[in-house]
Image 1 (cartoon, rainbow, N blue to C red):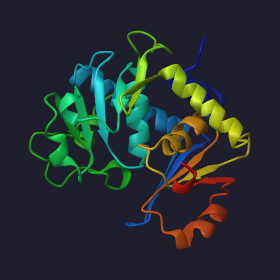
Image 2: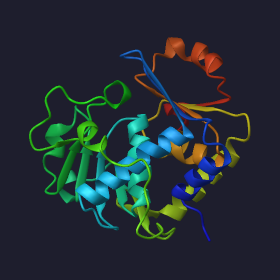
Image 3: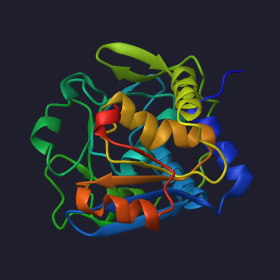
Amino acid sequence: MPSTPVDQLRSALAADSARPFTTFYDDATGERVELSVATFDNWVAKTANLLRDDLAVEPGARVSLLLPAHWQTQVWLLAAWSLGLAVTFDGDPADADVVVSGPDTLDRAASCPGERVALALRPMGGRFPEPPAGFLDYAAEVAGHGDRFVPDGSARADAPALIEAGREHTAGDLAASGEAAAREWNLGPGDRLLTSSSFARTGGLRAGLLAPLAASVPVVVCRHLDESLLDRRIEAERVTRAVTRSDD
């Protein structure tokens, strides 16, 4: 059976749940967050439970993600795929069943006729000081959900998982894309990947999530990257492959 990104996360969890999964930097704020595979999986489970239990989202629904390169974007992608949802970064939120927005895109997100979720993108998933009108505050809502997700059925490899420029990619396609990227970049045990690219770009999604899942290696995601810090960060985080915007 073809694998999916969700299957690859399950494999990483079984192999070594304590190892780092993602390390996030925001050079505009000085934030650094590191999540183990187990902690990341807990966030994915809580988010999937929120989608299913509170928002009643059904398999096949379309989710518009208006989010930057961020560890919470990684969480939302895996949560959506756990439920068999199709994610889009470049579609019109007015055509989506659910929109998930950062604080800078709330006006655009307001066109969604379905459920609207807002992320403050504050350190360690903090809440908005004042929840935006017409939106659920993700940080406030997700906290009460369980950190184990039991799906109603398995997410199929042939289910649409990403809509990019009007083209559908299945969950199996995404897993295969990650495997191809891992081979291209010669990723294996002991490697660590770094990216500063938006997940809305093909190269950014491969580097920021799909290849690390496929190769079971940690990833360092940098937002607002200060290029003057890059060499120092590569050394400090023991990065073996850096994928920048020019590599997309």
